Length: 363
Length: 130
Image (cartoon, rainbow over all chains, first blue to last red):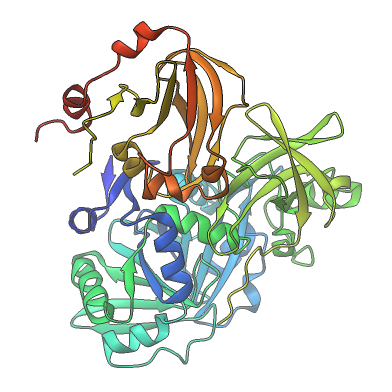
């Protein structure tokens, strides 16, 4: 099991640790509901150093990136961030990532923990035809934490004595702090305002402690993977391995908007175009329970007497107090208002298809 | 430190049982169990009249993260269920031995009651010495 550099800090805060792919990570420090609501009301601090981080450099960096992603990075400003899937030739999702454009010759890519090695070998394989391209896995050198919540901008200012409020959503900036190189990015996975902060690994613990100390009075608390999952689900954000994988294409999910067919060429384009023309037969959709019962990943979705799909993510939602989830079902039934049954422990419970996000920040 | 009541008997799977009269046993989950589960957000209870077997799953509790089976401490028939914990599952966290009770079971085999763990035996398994 790998540990992030914050392992001892998590234990100090009495974290309940769990295995998450190759890593031992904090599931929760307090209760998941308290941490969740703390992020919605104040802010929470997450260790997300388990995520894969890669640097792409060279004068072919932009065309390389354009080829591996379905979204269009050519329109990005320097200092801008974009969310995109990367697909195989069949259009199946290999990973969903954020790409950070420093300039057209230099990108930073952040992917899922579970896909770190797969992503790296995929990038290397695809890089063969791009001369002079440098691809580095910087996961162990640059750590990553997330400060998320309505007070996060104020908390950054408390911590660094300068404001980062000039950053628009999906933009980042470099910052030198006591000899450490820091990247501050206005991005996140919670549906709240927030920042993701990259820092040289040797300065991570100092920064983590400083953020918590300076902002304790404003209600900042560490938050674990449990709250991260309920927050992202309420915000209608997908989780790789649950809501998407290599057998699912972006067009079958809620991130169909990330496929830019007007781009010249990219991996998976032909298959995705064919799927678009034929029409999709199943679709990922949000639902909420009408009957009492908590849907979980894998539960069958039933319409009449027919199984029409399965739940991919499901949970109690602390902000709405409802039980919610995503399911991958026959496209014909994926219409808002449609009533379905979720099979939980051999009993059918009534649910209805709803619009996502399930929760919108009031801030 | 979990709290273990002296007047109750326990199971290895962290349920408690209290004899109400000659025939009927009340049951629920222990303080230790609810602490491990943390936020309890859902409880599923069996139907009235259902026949339970000692050691077999008889109810389900769910935390935010996952579902867990709860096991019958004794065999018998369900004669009462606590509707209140279905409406307010957090009662199980707040008062596991009181308002957070699960079921009343009319016992079929009084000998099973004697086979349950004493408070001292339960303490030994739920709070291993450091």
